[in-house]
Length: 339
Image (tube, rainbow, N blue to C red; front, side, top):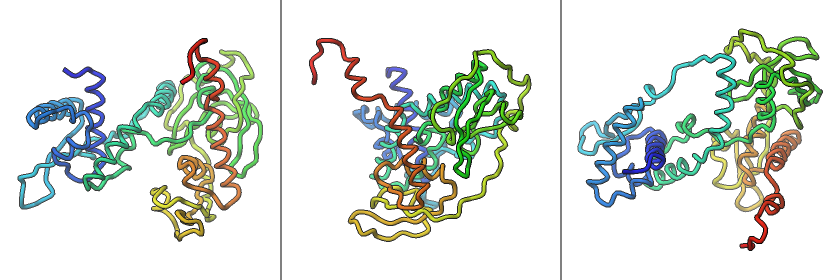
């Protein structure tokens, strides 16, 4: 009998496989895409394991349905997940529940799910199956640069400790803010801290991606008490920011940054071999900078200048969060031979 962790990984890979495409997948395609099924030495052994896995997932509430691509022939049955039944309805949480879920989300983002999901998608593409990467959102979160302010702000909300930090406005101006943080919450793909702004003497919400530098406590734990009742649905009501209609000019490596290319205004070969010039609407400098940073060396910002600066800021923050190799070497046990 498979170990629980091994079985869980197999079931997770099966869910990823069935969500990664909108087409019907045959048993042979599933067998080739899910790594753990390679352990089955015979077709009979695979059939038994696959049938058990399907029932296990259905008992967990994951709706696996059967069908076929052909309206005339049903000799090759396929499988997929019923997306309408799988999606969760809108759920509301209390402020305390949002804080716990916020921390759990950060732990989830650090989990090693990228490997299994990427391998499943690659194998499906190799089999000629059209994949749908957007369907994996919710199963495998997108990798984005984590805001350094999250951990200290979560700790401050937990301890009821006031903090100060530098906050950059949409216009680029940075000012010092002093906040009694009540809760961390997420809205429209952005993290916010909500609390009592001591400078404005009013409730305010701050987007974590606009916090610059460190977050510093300015009082002991228990310095304040959040309101007894907080409406989670109304916690974050940021002022609508005008869309930045400027055009960003990017140098993109050929074959990379597919999602960025899909919404491009236009693209053309660059003078440098192996690169394209891609033009896209900025929309929001902070969001676009975070996305571009995620592509690493495959995307270079040519203009506008503030977008380039924002990308450098994201990469610098990520670099600062990585422990230097020299520190790791100092931790090596004495007398251990170098590899």
